[in-house]
Length: 463
Image (cartoon, rainbow, N blue to C red; front, top):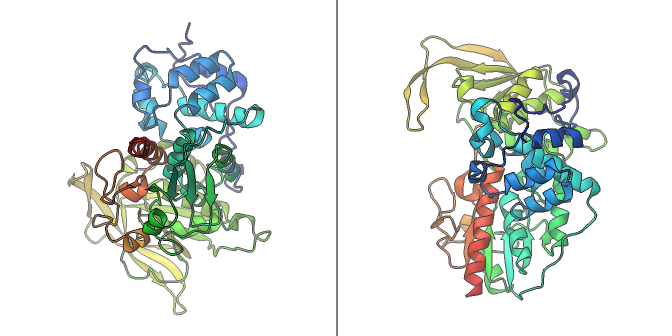
């Protein structure tokens, strides 16, 4: 019989005053006893709405039932039937807006902690699992995947399980895409991503790094000269957006993309062991309200900033960041300056940032997104001190693939246009998915796109 406790089993965490000075993982994970207790809260519904809320259709009640029985390895294999990156999803997926949103237990209490259980199962298997993935029989067909982020890795893994010879081409020196260069270590340890990718390699996936498609090779060359019968483009959205205000070229102004990449891929958080210092002032302002803004602000705090503010033009309730990330940021001493809009970044005579001029905002009528539009308050300008300003207002796809593939249709933002959920582009035998199609979105939506494209590619090449 299910445990009818209305509350989730709490997840152990580092204390805020300790974790805001290190890059170790904030959430410490469930013990076996905690996982079994939480799994016993699941009602194992006959019509599991939670599965419908999962973009990769993880068999949620089935794996949770196995956890409740203490069959952790079996639970891992059940998740693996549909998800290639369970340790990643268990940490960074917005479960509150997806699977857990539809959990029946959430009607009279907290939903089952599906994400925490997925993380537990994946971590348990990494520590205790002994069997290796069985490499399938090759079918003699080659597929190229451009980009080793969540959509590309998912597509590659699903195709490899079907016997395809898959090569993933990655521009950086380390595979993982946004999982390694965008998400901080304290939310998603690099070693976790590395182990997930190693499992894909054991399936037969080849990963070729330092391969900038559009420079080293073109999409056309992959198809015509290198024997690939289809190409999947999952290059993400790595081109940062800016505010277009005075002072953005001052010293001490970063895009969040550059800031987080320097910390993650270049290991600036381990300076001086790794000689990649980051200029950091006492006062830091981060502009934006999404997960990237939270990541940048919390990282700045860990790098030694004394006072970190997040400037956002709407209210806290309207911030697109996960509630958990906002909660953690506030616990760690990050100040939220909501209903505030940047006007100008201020500099000294030597070109260094010294502050930011902002104006107060109030919420007016809803705009096209359905959210109330922020409207400036008259004569409300004010100045905040800052030696560093980090712009985290969104990203768009890099134009390199678009510019070197003339018959690949894109929209005005540079996002690749696809015909339907299959990811089929305007170019024959070329598919795309993830942030390269949608613009910056979530890891799990990118994975879902990679999974759909793998099905479509298999359907095409089997004909």
